[in-house]
Image (cartoon, rainbow, N blue to C red; front, side, top):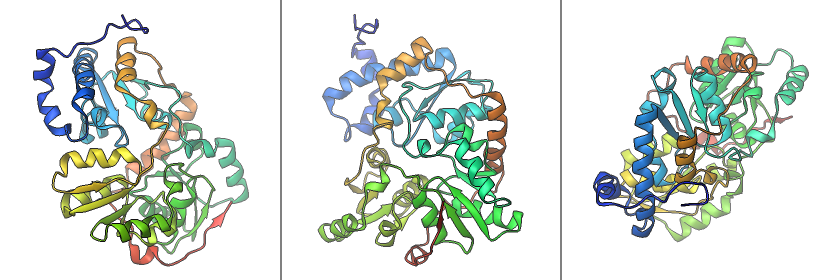
Amino acid sequence: MAADGFAPLAFTPEVEAETQALWERVKKHVTPMEWRLQAPLIAEINRLKREKNAVILAHNYMTPEIFHGVGDSLGLAKEAARSDAAIIIQAGVHFMAETSKILSPDKRVLIPDLRAGCSLASSITGEDVRLIKARYPGIPVVTYVNTTADVKAETDVCCTSANAVQVVEHVAKEWGVDRVILIPDEFLARNVARQTDVKIIAWQGRCEVHERFEAQDILDLKAAYPGAQVLAHPECPAEVLEVSDFAGSTAAMNDYVLTKKPKQVILITECSMADNVAVDAVDTEFLRPCNLCPHMKRISLENIHEALVKEQYEVFVDPVIADRARLAVQRMIDLPPPAVPARYDLVKARHHVDVELI
């Protein structure tokens, strides 16, 4: 019996047969020894999902055995709020679980580890936003979804890295202004500013994964691997985008690899994404000069299993805050999606544009 009260799960012939198709997909990214421990958990988690009418929303920064093994499809994740699932397991960080609860107030939202936070989300509070609005009256506030519920509650519209330019331009037009507050990611704001004529007021929040990349890192990689395509996330410093071959959200990066099929690619983002994209991009070699997110890596098959068994670590959001935050998220959802995953124009990205830092 394990210390947590659960008996170890065995790698039986039944488990091997049940997970064989998945093993064929991930075997280049998981060792056979690891798989003998992971496969029984994957089989049991998927059984519990069916038994308890649960979905697992797995971020693409999760490791492959989670993302491909127990995570639900992107389409189902988008429909989770409207599905008949009773429980949502957030295989990601805390602000994501809060957002799931905001959009699905009648469902139980569980997170496998309450310590799975985010340096960017913790860089700003609702009180900070109230002070910003007092300083800039009449200027609309666009907030990145990588924020807590109390920050979203003080927001006019939310955005993602994929639609940030679209949202900023929409809000400026709707409000009849030439300036927009875009918080809290400083680097996302700087990169958006280079894509639009709308003036940007920014906050000095940063993602601890993406802020560590430097332009010289990219130049060194290009010198070492001259045939490799470098794809950067817009949470990276603007100088990184300037010397990259492509910039866009995780969805845009994924789409680029699967459609362009480069022979070699370098994803300048969290490390596990390369493993997850590589499962489907079998003809592309992935070079991995990436950084790990210590918060994402708090989520494991073991604690996902424990969360399902014990139905523990439920995430709650004050209903008053949730109602206000939901308006900001819904305004974003109601915008028409781009025809293809948005990319950042690298010609524009190489032109310096000042932002006003709060």
